[in-house]
Amino acid sequence: MISGDRQVIKNQQGPFYHLLREFCRYWERIDVICPMAAEDRLIFDNVYLHGAKNSVSRIYQKAQEVYQRSRFEVMTVHDYPPFKHSRAALKINRKFKTPYMIEVHHVPGYPKAGDFKEWLLKIYFEISFRFVARPAKVIRVVNRVQTPTFLLFAGIPKSKIVYLPSFYLDKEIFQPQKLEKKYDLLFVGRLVKNKGLDLLLAIFELMKKERPEFRAAVVGEGAEKENLKLKITNLKLVSQVELLGWLPTSQALAEAYNQSKVLLITSANEGGPRVGLEALACGVPVISTDVGIMPDIIQPGKNGYIAQWSAEDFTAKIKRLSDFSLGGNGGEMGKTEMIVESVKSFDYQKMIRDYAQGIKSLVRYN
Image (cartoon, rainbow, N blue to C red):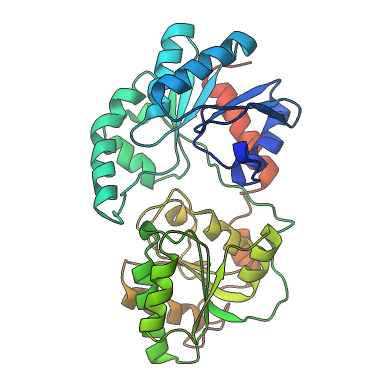
């Protein structure tokens, strides 16, 4: 596996770590090349982590070393512009004839660019990806509609695009709890430009005008945190909006969902986001922009709404959810059970089993 994940090599137990914990059961050995210089180490008895500086030559060099030891038979390549991982995989394929699958979890700047840099990355992706993708066995996508639509436009044959979702839920953690609803609105995510933070603040402004007593929480850290704090102060939203930072555990995050009436996703572009699925698993409706997997999951009026990139549209959808009372599951919403039911297929063990079997079948690996 040529991964884009930096957490696992640093002993941080993020989503990729938890994927490997279950994924390793389906393989004799897994070698993971991570895009940063670090000491090689072993986890889960058969998962070998290898650090390599994030350049085509260093990844290729490390992969050659790994191949001499393990003779790996298939590669998965998580990639994004400028496609260093796919270019390294191509060189490995040419030398060792090892089949590989490119995984596209997210297209920067699509469907909407968060800034000029993302717009440039989208154009680069559109022009360049077909060349690095051509030798790959398949291109894996993690949502049914949005990424395939872009890849088809970028010249990738439909026959080469395969949907294998990567999002899974630990339903022992993310489930409905009988907790007091402290927050009318919740945001969870990195505090960076493409998360739509200006749109989020505009929604809060409109809500304050209509319901001055409303309460919102923001969970996350990132480069825009200080700027966000300043804007909250300037907009006189300090009494309404609480910044919680990153929560220390998944259990704490599940509590935050259960203490909230609605989750807002205001992103310009996404691969998922995972937080939408987690909130739904806790019985909390979601209002999201048209990004990532959300159009695949959201059933209007049943578990949430897809909104335009407009504070007015978000506010209107919030009212429709709550029948003007921000009352969680009232108004047009179905019962909590209906919301939870909408993500029942994202079971942790099932998703990872399907992922492993998908890789084996796609590359004719036995």
